[in-house]
Image 1 (cartoon, rainbow, N blue to C red):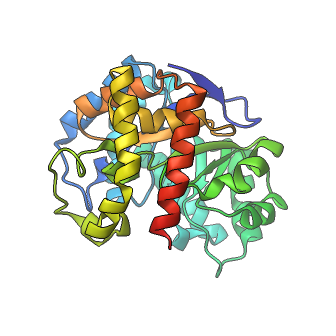
Image 2: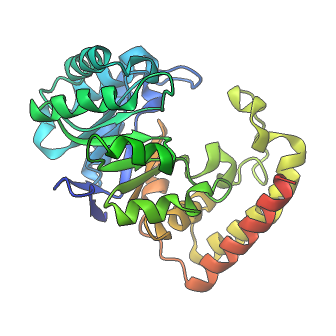
Length: 307
């Protein structure tokens, strides 16, 4: 496992972060808590030190599973969680943090994020609460998720940002325009999510005969026309995967981690086999020719999808 610094916070984290959204339920089928707890232990045993959750995942159930499982190992893990956009008034941030601390069974959160921006609540009020929590020792580092550069600039007028959590993959590359450069210049770690585009980049919907039967039926990338337009990229992923005796998901993850400015990626699953497969993606070294081919084919496919 490779490790990286979380901005200027002094915190070191694994480049693969275990995403714990699915542990809470919601749109996903949920495995028993005991199985999910076992997978958290497996992650730690394989060098994953950072675990990402949120108060909104399963109404706090994800945090509860993480807390019950990892509290005895608190000194070995980096706990990351998020406050919901509805809770960004100062008093609500403080109350939400107390709830997360209780569910996580800890007296401090390593990285506390704003989950989504809320234009109806003044960012200065929110960041004042974050600074207070940091001064009290209840959080160690401050992050934002799904923020634009303009929104990060506004937040940084009131508090130092240590991390950004944006969506990024071969079919979602908006952060390459200016976000990655801004974060590099400001020493903000970038921890991406959705690296295999909700499963599209694993190849199971193009080559594995899988059909979408859950919430993804409404997602643009899963429509019949889009699946056909994505095929050149999936075929290239398959070719590169075969050359490395790897999976398509591993190649997609390796591409994301190869981008300058990407500190790490958040990968969530309840499936142990998928988890171990994803871990191997962090160790896969793509050649510059392969990265360039993926870059060019992805850009061409995106132009078609967005036409």
